[in-house]
Image (cartoon, rainbow, N blue to C red):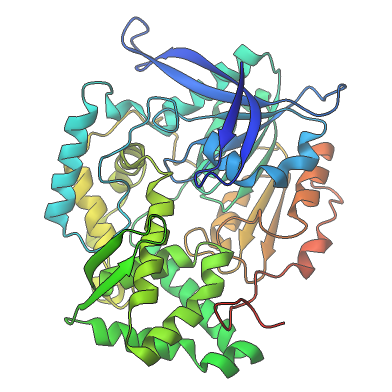
Length: 461
Protein backbone atom coordinates (compact mmCIF):
# COMPACT_ATOMS: atom_id res chain seq x y z
CA UNK A 1 0.00 0.00 0.00
CA UNK A 2 1.20 3.59 -0.59
CA UNK A 3 3.11 5.15 2.30
CA UNK A 4 5.69 7.80 3.12
CA UNK A 5 9.07 7.32 4.78
CA UNK A 6 9.98 10.29 6.97
CA UNK A 7 13.42 11.62 7.82
CA UNK A 8 14.06 11.39 11.62
CA UNK A 9 14.29 15.20 11.79
CA UNK A 10 11.27 15.54 9.47
CA UNK A 11 13.41 17.15 6.81
CA UNK A 12 12.09 15.05 3.92
CA UNK A 13 9.51 12.40 3.09
CA UNK A 14 9.91 9.65 0.51
CA UNK A 15 6.92 8.05 -1.23
CA UNK A 16 7.01 4.25 -1.13
CA UNK A 17 4.97 1.07 -1.13
CA UNK A 18 4.83 -0.47 2.35
CA UNK A 19 3.84 -3.88 3.58
CA UNK A 20 4.27 -6.36 6.40
CA UNK A 21 4.98 -10.07 6.59
CA UNK A 22 3.96 -12.16 9.59
CA UNK A 23 6.75 -14.49 10.78
CA UNK A 24 7.31 -16.59 13.90
CA UNK A 25 9.41 -14.81 16.49
CA UNK A 26 11.09 -18.14 17.15
CA UNK A 27 11.74 -19.95 13.83
CA UNK A 28 11.90 -23.26 15.69
CA UNK A 29 8.33 -22.72 16.96
CA UNK A 30 6.25 -21.82 13.88
CA UNK A 31 3.02 -21.90 15.92
CA UNK A 32 4.38 -19.64 18.63
CA UNK A 33 4.27 -15.85 18.92
CA UNK A 34 4.20 -14.07 15.57
CA UNK A 35 5.78 -10.71 14.78
CA UNK A 36 5.35 -8.41 11.82
CA UNK A 37 8.28 -7.59 9.58
CA UNK A 38 7.83 -4.16 8.05
CA UNK A 39 9.24 -3.49 4.61
CA UNK A 40 9.04 -0.87 1.89
CA UNK A 41 9.60 -0.90 -1.84
CA UNK A 42 10.70 2.16 -3.80
CA UNK A 43 9.65 1.09 -7.32
CA UNK A 44 12.11 1.64 -10.15
CA UNK A 45 11.46 4.75 -12.23
CA UNK A 46 11.84 2.87 -15.51
CA UNK A 47 8.89 0.82 -16.73
CA UNK A 48 11.37 -1.79 -17.98
CA UNK A 49 12.89 -2.31 -14.55
CA UNK A 50 15.67 -4.83 -14.08
CA UNK A 51 14.74 -8.03 -12.22
CA UNK A 52 17.30 -7.80 -9.40
CA UNK A 53 16.57 -5.08 -6.83
CA UNK A 54 18.90 -3.47 -4.31
CA UNK A 55 18.23 -4.37 -0.66
CA UNK A 56 19.56 -1.78 1.80
CA UNK A 57 20.84 -2.96 5.20
CA UNK A 58 21.26 -0.31 7.90
CA UNK A 59 23.87 -0.06 10.63
CA UNK A 60 23.74 0.48 14.35
CA UNK A 61 23.03 -2.28 15.16
CA UNK A 62 19.49 -1.03 15.69
CA UNK A 63 18.73 1.42 12.88
CA UNK A 64 15.77 0.67 10.62
CA UNK A 65 16.37 0.42 6.89
CA UNK A 66 13.36 2.68 6.19
CA UNK A 67 14.82 5.38 8.46
CA UNK A 68 18.24 5.04 6.87
CA UNK A 69 16.84 5.41 3.36
CA UNK A 70 14.81 8.49 4.34
CA UNK A 71 18.13 10.09 5.33
CA UNK A 72 20.21 9.09 2.26
CA UNK A 73 17.73 8.22 -0.50
CA UNK A 74 18.92 10.69 -3.18
CA UNK A 75 22.34 9.02 -3.24
CA UNK A 76 20.70 5.89 -4.67
CA UNK A 77 18.80 7.78 -7.39
CA UNK A 78 20.97 6.43 -10.23
CA UNK A 79 20.40 2.84 -9.12
CA UNK A 80 16.72 3.56 -8.50
CA UNK A 81 16.15 4.51 -12.15
CA UNK A 82 16.26 0.86 -13.25
CA UNK A 83 15.96 -1.16 -10.05
CA UNK A 84 13.55 -1.40 -7.17
CA UNK A 85 14.97 -0.42 -3.79
CA UNK A 86 13.85 -2.73 -0.99
CA UNK A 87 14.00 -1.73 2.66
CA UNK A 88 13.40 -4.34 5.35
CA UNK A 89 13.24 -3.10 8.93
CA UNK A 90 15.28 -5.84 10.59
CA UNK A 91 13.43 -7.52 13.46
CA UNK A 92 13.79 -5.35 16.54
CA UNK A 93 14.04 -2.07 14.56
CA UNK A 94 11.70 0.47 12.97
CA UNK A 95 8.21 -1.02 12.72
CA UNK A 96 9.36 -4.66 13.05
CA UNK A 97 8.56 -5.10 16.76
CA UNK A 98 11.22 -2.55 17.77
CA UNK A 99 13.27 -3.21 20.89
CA UNK A 100 13.44 0.39 22.05
CA UNK A 101 14.65 0.98 25.60
CA UNK A 102 13.17 3.89 27.61
CA UNK A 103 16.64 5.39 28.11
CA UNK A 104 17.63 5.06 24.46
CA UNK A 105 20.99 3.80 23.27
CA UNK A 106 24.00 4.01 25.57
CA UNK A 107 25.80 7.01 24.12
CA UNK A 108 26.85 8.79 27.32
CA UNK A 109 29.89 6.92 28.60
CA UNK A 110 29.53 8.32 32.12
CA UNK A 111 27.19 5.73 33.62
CA UNK A 112 29.06 3.20 35.71
CA UNK A 113 28.66 -0.56 35.08
CA UNK A 114 26.14 -0.90 37.92
CA UNK A 115 23.87 1.85 36.61
CA UNK A 116 24.15 0.53 33.06
CA UNK A 117 23.21 -2.99 34.18
CA UNK A 118 20.22 -1.62 36.13
CA UNK A 119 19.01 0.22 33.05
CA UNK A 120 19.38 -2.96 30.97
CA UNK A 121 17.26 -4.86 33.52
CA UNK A 122 14.55 -2.18 33.35
CA UNK A 123 14.57 -2.38 29.56
CA UNK A 124 14.30 -6.18 29.65
CA UNK A 125 11.32 -5.96 31.96
CA UNK A 126 9.67 -3.36 29.74
CA UNK A 127 10.12 -5.50 26.59
CA UNK A 128 9.31 -8.91 28.08
CA UNK A 129 5.56 -8.67 27.50
CA UNK A 130 5.94 -8.48 23.73
CA UNK A 131 9.35 -9.91 22.84
CA UNK A 132 11.85 -12.60 23.65
CA UNK A 133 14.81 -10.32 23.08
CA UNK A 134 17.19 -13.23 22.55
CA UNK A 135 15.51 -13.97 19.20
CA UNK A 136 16.67 -10.81 17.44
CA UNK A 137 20.10 -11.89 16.19
CA UNK A 138 21.69 -11.68 12.77
CA UNK A 139 21.44 -15.44 12.24
CA UNK A 140 17.65 -15.22 12.45
CA UNK A 141 17.41 -11.88 10.64
CA UNK A 142 18.94 -13.22 7.42
CA UNK A 143 16.17 -15.83 7.30
CA UNK A 144 13.65 -12.99 7.57
CA UNK A 145 15.40 -11.18 4.76
CA UNK A 146 15.09 -14.17 2.47
CA UNK A 147 11.43 -14.60 3.36
CA UNK A 148 10.84 -11.05 2.11
CA UNK A 149 12.81 -11.77 -1.05
CA UNK A 150 10.64 -14.81 -1.75
CA UNK A 151 7.41 -12.99 -0.91
CA UNK A 152 8.26 -10.22 -3.37
CA UNK A 153 9.24 -12.71 -6.06
CA UNK A 154 12.86 -11.73 -6.71
CA UNK A 155 15.09 -14.63 -7.88
CA UNK A 156 18.30 -12.71 -7.04
CA UNK A 157 19.11 -9.55 -5.13
CA UNK A 158 21.93 -7.04 -4.74
CA UNK A 159 22.85 -5.96 -1.22
CA UNK A 160 24.17 -2.67 0.14
CA UNK A 161 25.17 -2.82 3.80
CA UNK A 162 26.72 -0.11 5.95
CA UNK A 163 28.64 -0.82 9.18
CA UNK A 164 26.71 -3.53 11.05
CA UNK A 165 24.71 -3.95 7.82
CA UNK A 166 27.88 -5.35 6.23
CA UNK A 167 27.82 -8.15 8.81
CA UNK A 168 24.21 -8.92 7.84
CA UNK A 169 25.05 -8.80 4.12
CA UNK A 170 27.97 -11.20 4.45
CA UNK A 171 25.99 -13.64 6.55
CA UNK A 172 23.11 -13.53 4.06
CA UNK A 173 25.64 -14.36 1.33
CA UNK A 174 26.94 -17.25 3.46
CA UNK A 175 23.44 -18.70 3.85
CA UNK A 176 22.01 -17.79 0.42
CA UNK A 177 24.84 -17.62 -2.14
CA UNK A 178 22.63 -18.49 -5.13
CA UNK A 179 20.24 -15.64 -4.35
CA UNK A 180 23.00 -13.01 -4.00
CA UNK A 181 24.02 -11.23 -7.21
CA UNK A 182 26.41 -8.60 -5.76
CA UNK A 183 27.47 -6.91 -2.52
CA UNK A 184 28.43 -3.36 -1.60
CA UNK A 185 30.03 -3.34 1.85
CA UNK A 186 30.46 0.19 3.25
CA UNK A 187 32.45 0.37 6.49
CA UNK A 188 33.27 -3.32 6.58
CA UNK A 189 32.90 -5.61 9.60
CA UNK A 190 34.81 -8.82 8.75
CA UNK A 191 33.00 -12.00 9.82
CA UNK A 192 35.88 -13.02 12.11
CA UNK A 193 35.70 -9.80 14.14
CA UNK A 194 34.24 -9.63 17.66
CA UNK A 195 34.09 -6.03 18.87
CA UNK A 196 35.76 -5.22 22.19
CA UNK A 197 38.57 -2.96 23.39
CA UNK A 198 39.60 -2.33 19.78
CA UNK A 199 36.74 0.15 19.47
CA UNK A 200 38.41 2.61 21.85
CA UNK A 201 41.84 2.20 20.25
CA UNK A 202 40.49 2.64 16.70
CA UNK A 203 38.54 5.73 17.76
CA UNK A 204 41.61 7.31 19.38
CA UNK A 205 43.72 6.71 16.27
CA UNK A 206 40.99 8.23 14.10
CA UNK A 207 40.79 11.34 16.31
CA UNK A 208 44.58 11.73 16.16
CA UNK A 209 44.54 11.60 12.35
CA UNK A 210 41.69 14.11 12.09
CA UNK A 211 43.33 16.65 14.42
CA UNK A 212 46.70 16.17 12.69
CA UNK A 213 45.02 16.87 9.33
CA UNK A 214 43.75 20.19 10.68
CA UNK A 215 47.26 21.04 11.89
CA UNK A 216 48.63 20.34 8.38
CA UNK A 217 46.07 22.47 6.55
CA UNK A 218 46.93 26.14 6.32
CA UNK A 219 43.52 27.70 7.04
CA UNK A 220 42.78 25.33 9.94
CA UNK A 221 46.19 25.62 11.57
CA UNK A 222 46.30 29.42 11.21
CA UNK A 223 42.95 29.67 12.95
CA UNK A 224 43.39 27.02 15.64
CA UNK A 225 47.08 26.16 15.86
CA UNK A 226 47.39 22.56 17.01
CA UNK A 227 43.87 21.24 17.85
CA UNK A 228 45.40 18.23 19.62
CA UNK A 229 46.68 20.69 22.23
CA UNK A 230 43.13 21.97 22.76
CA UNK A 231 41.84 18.41 23.08
CA UNK A 232 44.40 17.46 25.72
CA UNK A 233 43.97 20.77 27.55
CA UNK A 234 40.22 20.29 27.89
CA UNK A 235 40.63 16.66 28.90
CA UNK A 236 43.09 17.60 31.64
CA UNK A 237 40.91 20.48 32.86
CA UNK A 238 37.87 18.21 33.24
CA UNK A 239 39.70 15.44 35.11
CA UNK A 240 37.98 15.44 38.48
CA UNK A 241 36.59 18.94 37.89
CA UNK A 242 33.14 18.87 36.24
CA UNK A 243 31.90 22.20 34.90
CA UNK A 244 28.32 23.38 35.49
CA UNK A 245 26.60 24.34 32.22
CA UNK A 246 23.26 25.89 31.32
CA UNK A 247 22.23 25.61 27.70
CA UNK A 248 19.12 25.61 25.54
CA UNK A 249 18.49 22.20 24.00
CA UNK A 250 19.25 22.74 20.27
CA UNK A 251 16.36 20.45 19.30
CA UNK A 252 13.63 21.73 21.62
CA UNK A 253 14.82 25.05 23.07
CA UNK A 254 14.19 23.74 26.58
CA UNK A 255 16.73 24.84 29.21
CA UNK A 256 19.18 22.16 30.29
CA UNK A 257 21.38 22.29 33.38
CA UNK A 258 24.02 19.66 34.07
CA UNK A 259 27.65 19.12 35.00
CA UNK A 260 29.86 18.67 31.95
CA UNK A 261 32.44 15.92 32.52
CA UNK A 262 35.07 13.94 30.64
CA UNK A 263 32.33 11.43 29.78
CA UNK A 264 30.40 14.15 27.94
CA UNK A 265 33.53 15.21 26.08
CA UNK A 266 34.24 11.56 25.21
CA UNK A 267 30.73 11.15 23.80
CA UNK A 268 31.15 14.27 21.64
CA UNK A 269 34.50 13.06 20.32
CA UNK A 270 33.17 9.57 19.66
CA UNK A 271 30.08 10.67 17.75
CA UNK A 272 31.75 13.61 15.96
CA UNK A 273 34.42 11.58 14.19
CA UNK A 274 31.91 9.24 12.53
CA UNK A 275 30.78 11.60 9.78
CA UNK A 276 31.79 14.69 7.84
CA UNK A 277 29.64 17.46 9.32
CA UNK A 278 30.47 17.07 13.04
CA UNK A 279 34.09 16.25 12.15
CA UNK A 280 34.37 19.56 10.29
CA UNK A 281 33.18 21.43 13.40
CA UNK A 282 35.34 19.63 15.95
CA UNK A 283 38.57 21.75 15.88
CA UNK A 284 36.47 24.93 16.13
CA UNK A 285 34.49 23.66 19.13
CA UNK A 286 37.58 22.41 20.93
CA UNK A 287 39.52 25.63 20.35
CA UNK A 288 36.67 27.97 21.27
CA UNK A 289 36.06 26.08 24.51
CA UNK A 290 39.74 25.84 25.38
CA UNK A 291 40.19 29.61 24.93
CA UNK A 292 37.00 30.76 26.66
CA UNK A 293 36.62 28.02 29.30
CA UNK A 294 32.91 28.27 28.43
CA UNK A 295 31.52 24.77 27.76
CA UNK A 296 28.18 25.94 26.35
CA UNK A 297 29.04 25.11 22.73
CA UNK A 298 30.25 21.64 23.62
CA UNK A 299 27.23 21.04 25.84
CA UNK A 300 24.87 21.99 23.00
CA UNK A 301 26.77 19.69 20.64
CA UNK A 302 26.47 16.86 23.16
CA UNK A 303 22.70 17.25 23.30
CA UNK A 304 22.41 17.47 19.53
CA UNK A 305 24.57 14.43 18.77
CA UNK A 306 23.08 12.16 21.41
CA UNK A 307 19.53 13.12 20.41
CA UNK A 308 20.18 12.30 16.75
CA UNK A 309 21.70 8.94 17.70
CA UNK A 310 19.23 7.72 20.31
CA UNK A 311 16.23 8.69 18.19
CA UNK A 312 17.13 6.19 15.47
CA UNK A 313 18.81 3.23 17.22
CA UNK A 314 16.86 0.49 19.03
CA UNK A 315 19.07 -0.13 22.06
CA UNK A 316 17.52 -3.49 22.92
CA UNK A 317 18.27 -4.93 19.50
CA UNK A 318 21.78 -3.46 19.76
CA UNK A 319 22.24 -5.25 23.09
CA UNK A 320 21.09 -8.60 21.68
CA UNK A 321 23.58 -8.41 18.81
CA UNK A 322 26.50 -7.35 21.03
CA UNK A 323 25.75 -9.89 23.76
CA UNK A 324 25.31 -12.77 21.29
CA UNK A 325 27.76 -12.03 18.50
CA UNK A 326 30.60 -10.03 20.07
CA UNK A 327 31.12 -10.16 23.83
CA UNK A 328 30.99 -14.00 24.16
CA UNK A 329 33.83 -14.23 21.62
CA UNK A 330 35.96 -11.58 23.30
CA UNK A 331 38.41 -12.21 26.14
CA UNK A 332 38.45 -9.19 28.51
CA UNK A 333 41.42 -10.71 30.37
CA UNK A 334 43.62 -9.92 27.38
CA UNK A 335 42.86 -6.20 27.53
CA UNK A 336 45.76 -3.85 28.27
CA UNK A 337 43.73 -1.54 30.48
CA UNK A 338 46.59 0.92 30.94
CA UNK A 339 46.69 1.52 27.18
CA UNK A 340 42.90 1.62 27.03
CA UNK A 341 42.69 4.25 29.75
CA UNK A 342 44.92 6.55 27.70
CA UNK A 343 42.20 6.82 25.04
CA UNK A 344 39.30 9.27 25.27
CA UNK A 345 36.82 6.37 25.48
CA UNK A 346 38.89 4.55 28.06
CA UNK A 347 37.41 1.29 29.27
CA UNK A 348 33.96 2.79 29.81
CA UNK A 349 32.24 1.41 26.73
CA UNK A 350 33.77 -2.05 27.07
CA UNK A 351 32.89 -2.19 30.78
CA UNK A 352 29.38 -1.01 29.95
CA UNK A 353 28.91 -3.74 27.37
CA UNK A 354 30.24 -6.37 29.76
CA UNK A 355 27.79 -5.14 32.41
CA UNK A 356 24.84 -5.25 29.99
CA UNK A 357 25.74 -8.72 28.79
CA UNK A 358 25.76 -10.11 32.33
CA UNK A 359 22.00 -9.50 32.45
CA UNK A 360 20.98 -9.54 28.78
CA UNK A 361 20.03 -12.92 27.24
CA UNK A 362 22.15 -14.45 24.48
CA UNK A 363 20.35 -15.59 21.38
CA UNK A 364 20.83 -18.14 18.60
CA UNK A 365 23.96 -17.85 16.50
CA UNK A 366 25.00 -20.04 13.59
CA UNK A 367 28.07 -22.22 14.31
CA UNK A 368 29.95 -20.73 11.34
CA UNK A 369 28.98 -17.13 12.08
CA UNK A 370 32.55 -15.96 12.77
CA UNK A 371 34.22 -18.27 10.27
CA UNK A 372 36.02 -16.68 7.30
CA UNK A 373 33.66 -16.16 4.36
CA UNK A 374 34.73 -17.52 0.97
CA UNK A 375 32.78 -16.46 -2.11
CA UNK A 376 33.18 -15.45 -5.75
CA UNK A 377 30.09 -13.22 -5.67
CA UNK A 378 31.15 -9.71 -6.83
CA UNK A 379 31.85 -7.43 -3.87
CA UNK A 380 32.76 -3.74 -3.67
CA UNK A 381 34.31 -2.80 -0.30
CA UNK A 382 34.34 0.86 0.77
CA UNK A 383 36.40 2.36 3.60
CA UNK A 384 37.41 5.77 4.92
CA UNK A 385 41.02 6.23 5.93
CA UNK A 386 39.87 7.96 9.15
CA UNK A 387 37.04 5.57 10.00
CA UNK A 388 36.88 5.33 13.83
CA UNK A 389 35.02 2.01 14.02
CA UNK A 390 35.69 -0.01 10.84
CA UNK A 391 39.15 1.05 9.61
CA UNK A 392 40.45 -0.04 6.18
CA UNK A 393 42.32 -2.99 7.70
CA UNK A 394 38.94 -4.58 8.43
CA UNK A 395 37.99 -4.44 4.75
CA UNK A 396 41.28 -6.07 3.82
CA UNK A 397 40.59 -8.87 6.30
CA UNK A 398 37.12 -9.48 4.84
CA UNK A 399 38.44 -9.31 1.30
CA UNK A 400 40.77 -12.30 1.72
CA UNK A 401 37.96 -14.73 1.06
CA UNK A 402 36.12 -12.63 -1.55
CA UNK A 403 37.82 -13.61 -4.79
CA UNK A 404 35.87 -11.21 -7.02
CA UNK A 405 36.25 -8.06 -4.95
CA UNK A 406 37.69 -4.55 -4.97
CA UNK A 407 38.57 -2.47 -1.92
CA UNK A 408 38.34 1.33 -2.24
CA UNK A 409 39.77 3.57 0.49
CA UNK A 410 38.73 7.23 0.51
CA UNK A 411 41.38 9.52 1.94
CA UNK A 412 40.36 11.53 5.02
CA UNK A 413 36.79 10.17 5.08
CA UNK A 414 35.18 8.64 8.15
CA UNK A 415 32.52 5.98 8.67
CA UNK A 416 30.30 5.29 5.65
CA UNK A 417 31.26 6.55 2.20
CA UNK A 418 27.90 7.61 0.76
CA UNK A 419 28.78 11.28 1.26
CA UNK A 420 31.70 11.04 -1.19
CA UNK A 421 30.77 13.13 -4.25
CA UNK A 422 31.08 10.42 -6.92
CA UNK A 423 30.10 7.36 -4.91
CA UNK A 424 26.64 7.22 -6.47
CA UNK A 425 28.23 6.74 -9.91
CA UNK A 426 30.68 4.12 -8.66
CA UNK A 427 27.91 2.08 -7.04
CA UNK A 428 25.69 2.33 -10.13
CA UNK A 429 28.49 1.11 -12.41
CA UNK A 430 29.31 -1.78 -10.11
CA UNK A 431 25.74 -3.02 -9.74
CA UNK A 432 25.02 -2.68 -13.45
CA UNK A 433 28.10 -4.72 -14.33
CA UNK A 434 28.11 -7.09 -11.32
CA UNK A 435 31.88 -7.38 -11.55
CA UNK A 436 34.88 -5.45 -10.29
CA UNK A 437 36.87 -6.19 -13.45
CA UNK A 438 37.84 -2.88 -15.07
CA UNK A 439 35.54 -0.99 -12.69
CA UNK A 440 36.49 2.69 -12.92
CA UNK A 441 36.75 4.15 -9.42
CA UNK A 442 39.30 6.85 -10.31
CA UNK A 443 36.87 9.64 -9.46
CA UNK A 444 37.22 8.76 -5.76
CA UNK A 445 40.84 9.95 -5.89
CA UNK A 446 39.54 13.50 -6.14
CA UNK A 447 36.93 13.21 -3.40
CA UNK A 448 37.52 15.26 -0.28
CA UNK A 449 35.47 15.48 2.92
CA UNK A 450 33.77 18.66 4.09
CA UNK A 451 36.49 21.25 4.94
CA UNK A 452 37.05 22.23 8.54
CA UNK A 453 34.94 25.15 9.76
CA UNK A 454 37.10 28.12 10.73
CA UNK A 455 34.06 29.97 12.10
CA UNK A 456 30.45 29.15 12.86
CA UNK A 457 29.66 30.52 9.39
CA UNK A 458 31.45 27.59 7.80
CA UNK A 459 34.72 26.72 6.04
CA UNK A 460 36.92 29.47 4.58
CA UNK A 461 36.04 30.58 1.04
